[in-house]
Length: 67
Image (cartoon, rainbow, N blue to C red; front, top):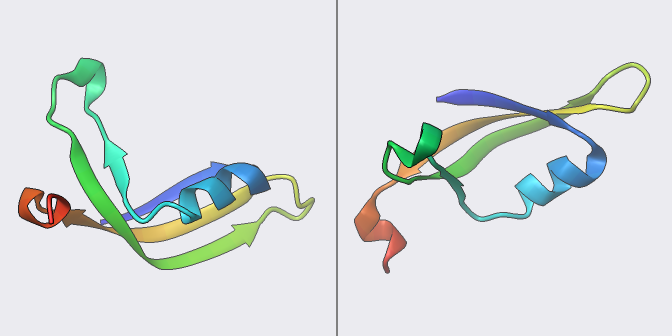
C-alpha cells in the first residue's frame, strides 16, 4: 500500500530511521500491524517548511517480527 506522511524535517527523519512502523487501530480495537518502508521519496513544499514522505508499506508477518 502506498502512503504519505507530512511533517517537519525532524518528524520525517524520525520516521525514516525506524526499521519498522507499528500501527494500532482506533481505540486499540484492531491488532497491532507492523510494516516496513520501501520505495521512499521525500519532497518539500515551495517554502521548505513541510516535507512529504511517500512510501510503500509492506506488512511484516508475526513470524518475521519474532525472529
